[in-house]
Image (cartoon, rainbow, N blue to C red; front, side, top):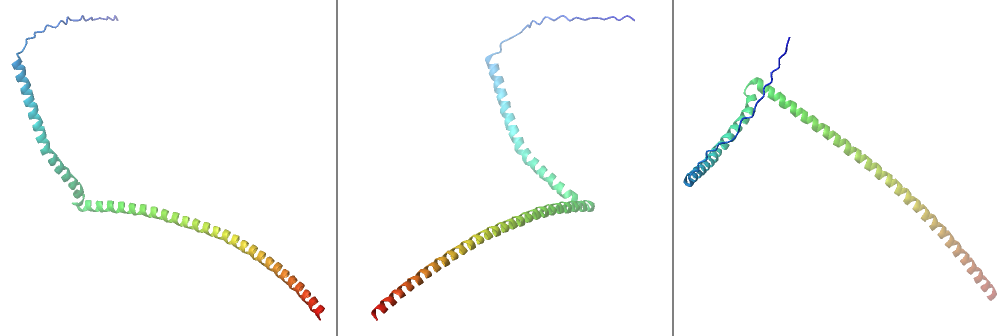
Length: 172
C-alpha cells in the first residue's frame, strides 16, 4: 500500500483594480438626492400611518384574547367545575394563610401583653416594698421623736412642778 500525497498550492491573483470612474453631472446627483429625500419622507409618513392603525387593532385583539382566556373555561360544564375547584382551592389556601398569620400575630400580642403585665407587676411590687419600707422608717422616726419630745416635756413639767412646789413651800 503506497500512499501518495498531493499538495496543491494557490497563487494569489493579481488584484489590481481597474476603475472606470465617470463623473456624473451635478444635476444628476441633485436629482438622486431629491428622490431619496422624497422616498424617505414618504416612508416616514407611511410608517406613522401604519402605526396609528396597527396599535388600536393590536390592543383590541389583545383584549379579545384575554376575554377569551377568562370565558373559555366557563363555557363547558367540565370547565366550569374545574375552574370552581381551582378557585375554591385558591380561596382555601388564602384563608389558611390568613389564619396562620392571624394566629401568629395573636400569639405574639398575647405574649407581649403577658410580658408587659409581668414587668409592671414586678415594678409595682418593688415600688410598694420601697414605699412600705420608707413609711415604716418614717413612722419609727416619728414615734421615736415623739417619745423623746414627750419625755423632754414630762421632764420639763416635773422640773417646773418641783420648782413651783419649792417656791410655794418657801412662801407658806
